[in-house]
Length: 152
Image (cartoon, rainbow, N blue to C red; front, side, top):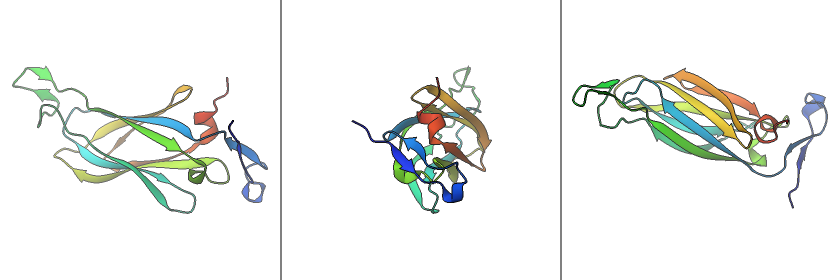
C-alpha cells in the first residue's frame, strides 16, 4: 500500500493542497558526451527548497581509448561516445511545496577539453526531458508529477 504525499501550497501559489508523490520516484539520468573527447568532471546534486543539497554522484567523462578526442587516428575510427546512466531516487524530502525539485550538474574538474554534452531524464513513463549544455553546467527544476505521474 502506498501513501500519497499531500503538501499544502505556500500562500495558495500552487493551487491548494496537491498530491505530489505516491511513493519515492525512480528516475534515470542519462549523460552523454557529445563531442567524444576526454571532457569535464561533473557532480550531480538535488537542490532542495531550503537551499540544502543532496549529492548523487560524480561523473567523469573519460574516453576509451584514453586520450581519444573526436577521432582516434591510431585505429582510424571515431572515438566512442561516453554514456553514463545514473539512477536517482526522488523522495518527499526533495520536494518543495509546489511538488518541484531541482537537479544541478556542476563542473568539478577537467580532464583536457571543454565539454559539450547532453543529459536526459527518464521516468516511469519513458523519456521526459533532454538538455544539452557546456562546461558551465546546468540547473533545472522539475515538477515531480510530470516525471513520475505522467498523464495518459
